[in-house]
Every structure is written in structure tokens, then in C-alpha cells.
Amino acid sequence: MTSADEPAEPSERQRYEAEVAAYVAAGGNEQVQRVVTAVHGLHRRLSQWYTKQLVDIGLSAGEWAVISHLAAETTDHVSTPSQLAEAAAVAPSSMTHRLDKMADRGLIERTPDPTNRTRILVRLTDEGWQMFQQVVRESDVVESDVLARVPERDRERLAKLLELAIAGLDDALR
Image (cartoon, rainbow, N blue to C red; front, side):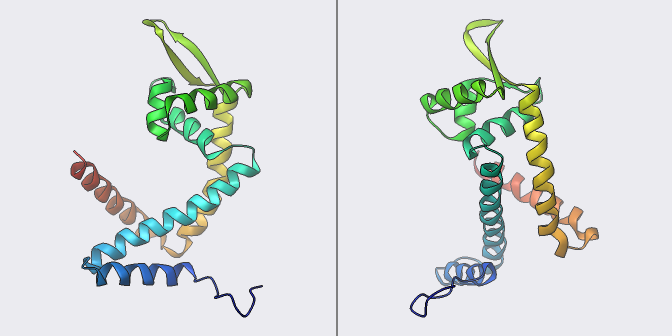
């Protein structure tokens, strides 16, 4: 309950409308701002939920960044500490500490690279993969609820449109 002196927290829809209006007033294209602001708002709210979910199962967002990156690696779910640090946007020393904790918990294992003994390879353990699966299954419930208002026949089109936007972002960042 809020006191009479505190303004009520705006709904996500109200926040979205205010942000779009501000960007358009500053010279942004309304159509572009509606899409970008909606995607950002969706990401922000899902991130809040994911953070809470991760805490509930004993993972930090940083540990999840490592697990999800390794799970997405197509070759044996292996990466190097420096690749993981770059993917998580943290300093290599921070990644080393994170990997130490994760190895102690049995989520990852580190081994010397057989082709370059000065390099370490990080791999998900079976326990790490099971943790990844648990998070994905639990997230899928909320993500399905988020998409419940989007008719099923439109979800494939929405996915393809967002994939086109991602491709445009990749092109813009080259």
C-alpha cells in the first residue's frame, strides 16, 4: 500500500506510452520508437522475473550468463574463460572468481586445452546442464504467459519479424 504522499507506480503500459512520447518529442520516429520501446520494456520485465527465479534456485545472473553461454555453444558446450568474460561483459578476473565458485558447486569443469596447454577450456557438467534445463523449463511457463495475448497464429510471424530486426542490428554494428 502506498501512502497518500507517494505517487502510484505507473503500469508497464503507462511507462511504455510515456517513453514513446518522450522519444517522439525528442525527434524519434514514432513507429520505430514503439517497436524498440516495446522490446526494451519486455526485456526489462522478463529480466526482473528471471533474476528472481535465479535467486530462488540459488544462481546469480552472472552464473546464469556462463551456463546459458556454454549451453548454446555448439561444439561440446565448451568455451574459454576469456570468451565467457567477453560474453558476460565482465573483467577476466571477475570471471575467474565466478568460475571458481561454479566449479566448487559442480556446475562447470575446467581442463587444459589439449591443443594449447596454456589455455583453459570450460565445459558444462551434467549438473550444469540439468540446471540449464530446469531454468528453461521454469522460464517457459512465464514466457508462455507473456505470449498468451498474442494469438498462436501470429507468434511465428512475430518471431520472424524480430529475427529480421536482429539481423538489422547485426548489420548496423559491423
